[in-house]
Length: 353
Ligand code: KDG
Image (cartoon, rainbow, N blue to C red):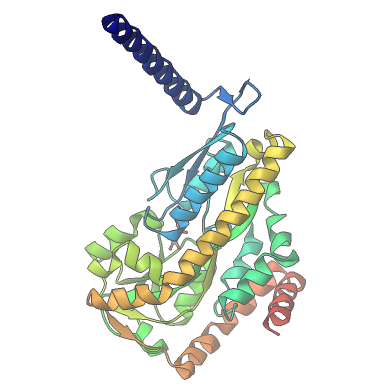
C-alpha cells in the first residue's frame, strides 16, 4: 500500500512540475513572441516599444525609463512591452529621433538642444541663464507654455509626452581652472549639436565643436577636445573625471529632456493605451527628476574625491558671462519669434513669484 501511495505522489509531482513549466513557457512566449499577449481577456496583439537613451544604465534617466517600463507593462497587462537600451546602443540623440520619425524606433528622451534641429522653437529652453532654478523650470515646462512646445512636435511625426530633467550644465576641462569668461579663451569645448550652444561658447571666447554624446568620452580621452559641459550626474556617472581635471559651477544652461514617442506608433495605440503611455511618461519623469535632484550635490563631492579641482563661479563672474552671451540670445529670440519668447519669459516671471 505504502509503495502504491509513493508511486501515486511521484506521478502527481511530475504532473504539477510539467504544468508549471508550461505556464512559464507561455509567459515567456507572450513577452518574447511579439504578437500575442494575455491581458486578462485572452490573446491580444503585443506592441513593443524600443526605448533608447544616450546616457548609461547608472543615470537617473535610465532608472526613470525602467519605471516607465514597469508602469506601462503593468497597466496594459503586458499588451505593451518596453525594451530599454542605454549608452547610445540604438544611436545618438539625432539618429534615434530620426528613427522615431521613420517609425523604426518608438521612444527616445533627448535634451531639448538636439530637438531644436527638428523644431527650432525648442532653442528657447537652451537660452543660457534662462531658468533660475528647477522648481520654476518644472512649473513652466509642465504648464500651458511647455505644452505649447510639445504641440509643435506632431508636425515632425513626433509626440512629446512629458518633460524630464537633464539639469543645470557645468563645465569641465583638462587644461585649467575656469573662474571667469577670460579663462574660456581658446578652450576646445564639445557642445551638443545645437547652433545656439555653439554661438554662446564662441561669445565667451571658447572654440566649440558640436559632437554626439556617444563620441564624447573618446574625444576627451584623445584630446580632440579639452572640455565639455554637462550636469554633475552625467560627469560622474559617465566617469568623465578619468579624463578631465577641472570642474566649475557655470550652471550656464538648464537642460530639459523631452520624452519623445514615434507619432506613427502612438497613432496605432488604442485611446486607453495612449492615456497609459502618456501618464506613465509623466509619472516616470517625476521619479527621474527626484532621483536627479537628490544626488546632485553628492556627485560634485564625488568628482572632487576622484581628484577633480572645483572652481567656484562668483555672481560677478557669472554676470560677465550673461552680458557676453546677451547678443546671441537676442539674435535667437528674433529667429524664434518675439511673442513666443516673451510668453516663456512671462511664464518664468510668474512661476518665480
Ligand atoms: O540620453 C540623453 C543624452 O543622449 C544626451 O542628451 C546627453 O546632455 C547630453 C549631451 O551632452 O549630449
